[in-house]
Image 1 (tube, rainbow, N blue to C red):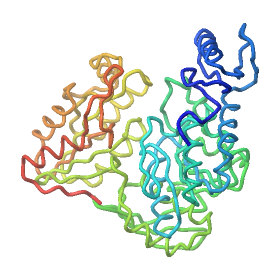
Image 2 (image 1 turned 90 degrees about the horizontal axis):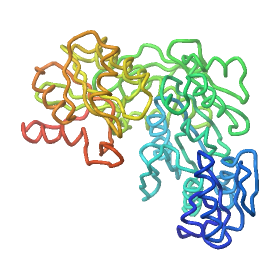
Image 3 (image 1 turned 90 degrees about the vertical axis):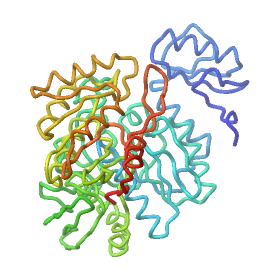
Image 4 (image 1 turned 180 degrees about the horizontal axis):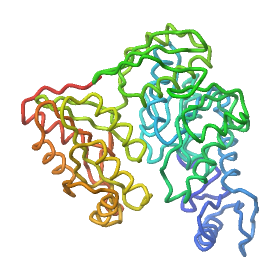
Length: 466
């Protein structure tokens, strides 16, 4: 099926004779202009929420919902022939989908993964700009998966995807809530709006069952009024699935899991309580699906962390930890874990994204200096903001002396020069990203590449913590 065979379009530039154009524009003026262009290109109908002075309008209550369902219908509802697992939450989505995907693969199922790291199944490996692609792209992927006889799809479900109705027309076998902490307030404005959006996923409209982290404050709303059969997991509060006697080292963890009153021992290459929580979510999903837990246990032992999630290098006795943490909660959990497994001093290199939630910047500055002995502030996708202004916002939450180096590669190098054997540094924010967004351009950059260059120059042996 080629790029232009879809007869429902959201981009007026791609409209062809007889297509239906969906007006998803954010404001009246843009929507009017795009709709005019679509009609001039031969659109037989414009689906919109606005009463434009144009012919062939179909005015609806929610155009995004209509678009999502139209895309699913156009491709023949391919996802109905697969079992879907959806994972939402501020942090942990990628790790949970990675674990579930790898376990299902190891157990012999034909499985696909959709999320931050792209779309993966069989020999297919694609990358998209969004965690959860738009409905037309997503449904096309399901269409292609169906042709490859995929049985299971494990996907990240972002708050933007829920709000923008990209998942309309999909029914999930199970939905997972990892946590709800501050992020994306540039879009949602308030934590209440953001949380309500996430929680709206946990409804029989989308799910047959749910797996929910009872340690999360917002999850109590689900606990008090579950809309679908729900399994609760946790590290702190009474739960259906919980961990005890957790032992962590830089290269992995071991713990006892009480799984509906059956106690099993699990080993994982993941480190830290927040990752054990992600493992508990995964085990809860596996139990929910009726998988053989001994097989799950064996599969889990060999699965390493996602690239960019607490990946550890050893540089002549110095530990270098690269992690995607880019929210206050994410940064705090990674630094807490790094502190537990660090012999001597802990360093932290991080920045905050431009044109995004400003309120989290000082909070992250305060968290960094609370847990790290030395902090270096630097760039992290400044976009259209001045780098120094972003750093100044972070510094509003800081009281201690710290280093500032806008050039991220130089920030890492300078920090490593200050370190001694037994010290560790957390390089946070970008994880596996291979670019810096400066203005509207993506400039080649990778934290991994910087570290590998240093390793090569020092003739040190690269050692992952997995």
